[in-house]
Length: 317
Ligand code: AMP
Image (cartoon, rainbow, N blue to C red):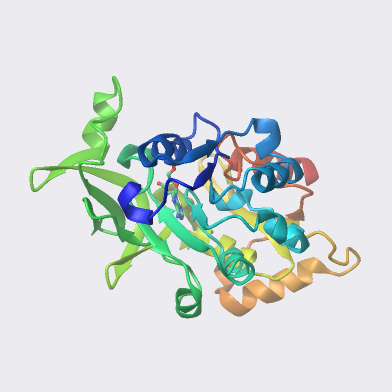
C-alpha cells in the first residue's frame, strides 16, 4: 500500500467498510505504516451520506475506499464540493460502472480514481489501475488493472489465478477446499479465484464469477454483462440481474432496478430499459422481467445482496 499508491503522512483514510470485510484492511493496516490518519466511522455514519459527507468535510478526508455500490454520488451530484478534500477514490469488490467512474473523473479533477481487484484469499487487492479519461474512452467495460509488483495473474481456461506471496496459506480446517482452490505454480503459492477474466496487454478484465454464469435455453449468459449495461443507462442508479431457479435449473433471469432520484416517475421506464438493453445485448440475454425497487439491498460488505433481491422480486410478483 505504501509503495503502490503514493499515499503521504498527511493523508486521511476514510474508513467505510465494516471491520469484518477485508476491504477495511486497506485503511486499517496502511494508515499506521504510512504515519497517516485514520477516520473511523460507525455503521450509522457510513450508511448515511449526509453524516458521512459531514465527517469527511470536517476532518478533511483524503482517501476514499469503498465498493462501488456504496457510491451515492450520482444522486448527490450537486453536493460534491463537500467531498473536495478527497485525493484518491479506491474501489474494490464489485464491478466499477463506467458511468460512475466517469462522473468522478469529471467532478473531482484533483483526485485519482483507482479500480482495484482481488479476493480476501489473496490479501485484499492484487491488481490496480488508474481510471483516467483515456481509459474511460478506450474501455466501455472498465479493466481491473495490472498485478502489483510482487504477484502475478494467470488465466487458466478463463479462470483468474493469482500467484505470489500475497496468496493466503489456506482456509482453516478445510483441507477439502484447500485442495481444490490452493495450488502451487513454479514453487509459488497460487489461488484459483473462481472469477472469470482475460488479459489484454497485461491488463486484467473481470468477466464475472464462475457462478455468475448461468445457462438458459442452452445459452451461456454472464449476468454481470447485463448488469453492466443496466448500470450505464443514464436514468439507472443501480441495477442487478439474478437467476430464478427451480430444482436447481435456471428458469428465467430478472433485473431489479433502482432509478436515479428525480427521474420522471410517470415515464415508461421498462420500455426505455428494454430499448437500452436491446441495443447492446443479444436477444437471449434480455431479462424476462424488471422490477423497480426504492433502495438496493446491500450485504454487510456493501455489495448487492442477491438473496435479498430474490426475495424482493418474489414479493413484488
Ligand atoms: P471478497 O473476498 O469478499 O473481497 O470478494 C472478492 C470477490 O469480489 C472477487 O473474487 C471478485 O469476484 C469480486 N471483485 C473484487 N474486486 C472486483 C472488481 N474491481 N471488479 C469486479 N469484481 C470484483
